[in-house]
Length: 225
Image (cartoon, rainbow, N blue to C red; front, side, top):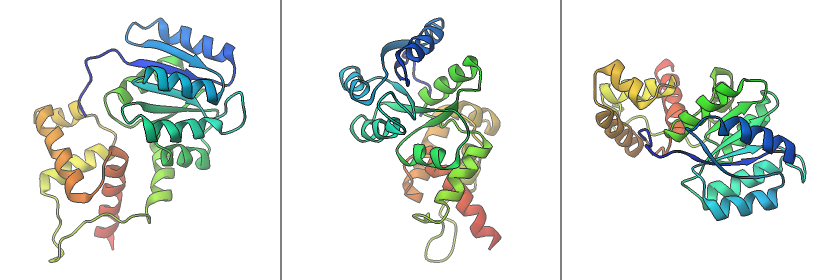
């Protein structure tokens, strides 16, 4: 969950070769990223991901071979290449597309109207193992998943299964803080924060930070009821 020391190796999938080239050139200006392949259609994009197994795949939701073909590439990449984190490029904040992206394994969604520096920040965050989504997109996810696979909040005696500190960590994750930021806020080491998060995963049955956000939301709903 902590920051990786390796330069992220990136594969780009855009709707046209020109868009691929423009995005690749923009990212290549930053030595923090290594663009290792580009493709404009799903067949060549999957072949590229299969060959290079990148750290991050940046995928347009629409590729040259059709609308939403990027989501199919996303789903297959998530199923076969667990070490590859995916960011989906969208033209606008569409509720259905945002939810579909996260359902199929995205770790972030990014909108083309945003500046390239924001994309760089998005890629850094995702490479650290975090989730990239703003408040509006996170609300879409919460609304879509709030009543699916309810989290295990309490034991048989109706006592919370999380300790006070674990609850604090869970809620800070839900607010979008990185492990380092949580460590600073709670005066803990990053290693300790990482251990708390693993403990929370084990107790609640979730397996990633998006699930942890949903857990925190469900916990809040349970308290209110």
